[in-house]
Amino acid sequence: MMDHGLLLLWQDYNLTARTLEHLAIFSVALLLSIAIGFAVGVLIFRKKKYSGIFFAILNTVETFPDIALLVILIPFLGVGAVPTVTACVLYSILPIARNTCTGLSGVSETHIRAARSIGLTDREVLLHIRIPLALPMLAGGVRIAVVFIMGIVTLGGLVGAGGLGVPLMTGIFNNIPALILVSGTWVGLLAVLFDGIVASIEKSLNQRYGIW
Amino acid sequence: MARLFENIDSIELNGISKLYSEHYAVENLDLRIEGGELLVLIGASGSGKTTTLRMINRLVEPDRGTVIINGTDTREFDVVALRRSIGYVIQEVGLFPHMNVGENIGLLPGLEGWESGKVKKRVSELLELVDLPPETYASRSTKELSGGQQQRVGLARAIATDPPLLLMDEPFGALDPILRRQLQDEFAEIKRLLGRTIVFVTHDIDEAFKLGDRVGVMHDARLVQVGRPEELILDPASDVVASMVDADRKFRHLEALSVRDLMLPLLSKYLFPGATEVAQAFAEMMDWDVGVAIVTENDQVAGTVRRRDAYRRRLEGLTMAAIAREPLIFEPGDPVTTALTELKRAGASFALVTERDQPVGLLLSDEVLMRLV
Image 1 (tube, rainbow over the protein chains, first blue to last red):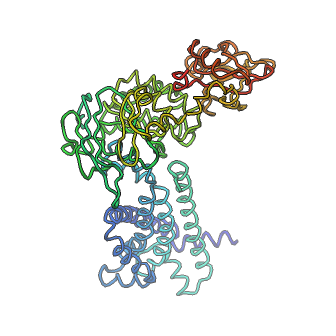
Image 2 (image 1 turned 180 degrees about the vertical axis):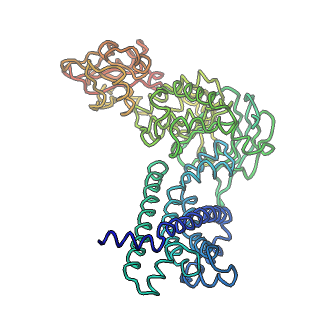
Image 3 (image 1 turned 60 degrees about the vertical axis):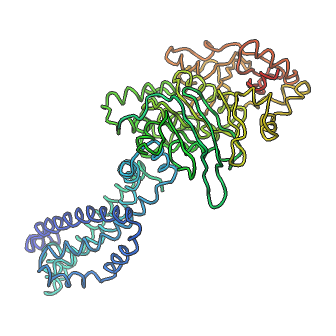
């Protein structure tokens, strides 16, 4: 009876479609965050002089409550997936960029000296030595971002982005405890799952590249 | 990137100085290094030898003076091109932990645009040269290497593109004495095969005399004397040189010493049962940094096998007993002079020391000692 009810609920509120929608936004946001966060991290590493300013800005963005950040973006970007993805990226740049920069700086002086003394250019040192050795740290940053993004995408349901936030809102506004329970648990499980996936990637990177 | 020079005719250091906050690391140093020679710079730590070495490949830029290679001031060279024309080996080795042994050695050839088949072939060649079987070691992680093995790979990496000049900064300094001597012997042979110009920094006078065609003594930021080993011994320019080459003053009283005083104690890792397969024993010798295996049968010494010989014969399917050779054997109470004379006559690099038929130590020959006998 319970199973039957769960199935009906799942179908009535299009939870399969919502899940796919949710994961689509999540994936786009995550990939953009990694690309931009990594690029910013490398930039900060290369322009040490400005790292203070960069981190001050990123830290300020980070202190905004996520729901506030999301609604602030609406006047500029409208409603839907765009402000949601933007908020995800703004939030995730800091952990990814910070970890990338820490990882790049943390490569031991011995290895850098060895690389330079056999004639690697700065670019080759970065590409062949620093970046590979920073990958475990980068993965650590991505792991934090995964948790952030899963939360913000869910909030995106509030601003018309779709995804699993929608049935959650429906459940809250129409007082349907079963729906709240099902979609809430489901989002939580997804977050745990993706965190686990990235954690295992981080672990294998650590075995191959780990210097920490 | 084009090689700046294919051969070294000469390297001239003209009045080079390096100041670090008010005091000289190197002061007004003049030195001419001839193409094809191995020049050793020796001195205590802080004497300026490493700084001098680093000024050759511009890891350190001199504050005064010039470094001229084959007639050209090194400041006119592109610094990356200069370093790619010069091999460099350091004590900490600095193998890249995210690359396996083969990738470490093949990095520079790869960046130089060699095709992968050629890189692979070169890596195998180099691993053979430094006595690491390519079939086992090319794909091994650098984290699984012992100190001696790392240094071998470091050397292979430095000479991967066959640079005409090699700079070595205390490459064997972190190794235990037996292994250090083993690697020195092997390196002397590799050096002969390469026929390259080498500048070598050390603080070990035995190493300097063993490897150097000429030796430059540094003290307190200055080069105090350069010459062939015997010139330094017979005609030291100052007390500093005299005391350094004479650091083995104890050998003046050689007659009073017995084998016991100079032998190295035997550790169980040197002992191998006669039935051990050569390939297996060789692998263990590599893992434990053992240069000489003492082969035992029924608690008796059946002979010894140098690692180099085990390496050469690892594919023949023999046991250690089959390839073991009778070593020179001394007793701890034998006078050192007799032992050294016999070693010298036999052309052996080591002898076994036994007491009541049980092995207790190894006596390694030493060029300085040999010369004094």
